Length: 172
Image (cartoon, rainbow, N blue to C red; front, top):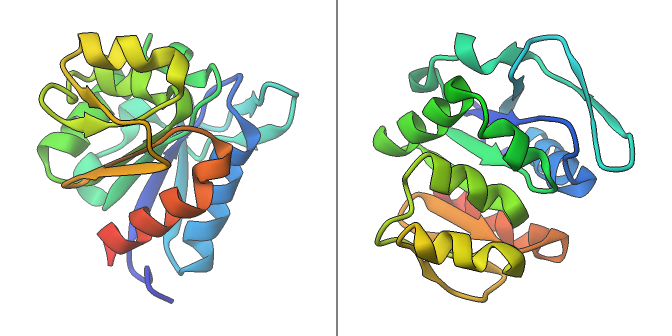
């Protein structure tokens, strides 16, 4: 198990894309990582775009990013809701400042722009948020996965195998 002893945050919020939460969450656990789901509140059931539930283990305001090795931000419309909470945005910003792995897929680039961590960085994301990323100073690449140091981004659910492979590589 490549990630034994590693601790990873998966951010959760309503209207998340099912595969973009569950595929990385289960894949990281499969590799031995301790995964914590983090929402704006602890113990809340958040529903995906189709109603599939995930329960938050902790609230973003209560998390010490220094206790974790990385953070995964799923897409769907959840990132637009996540970025409305300063504690959640601060978590992403602090993870980046501390050199933690920050991984974002699909619309999760919205969280990266709100955390102000994409200027001068190479990223990808769902094509509809390309302009948001570029206007925030990122260099956008249309690729299944883009790795810029400890920042890992992907475009859509089809990219999840490459996305998770790079997250695991960065955490080992």
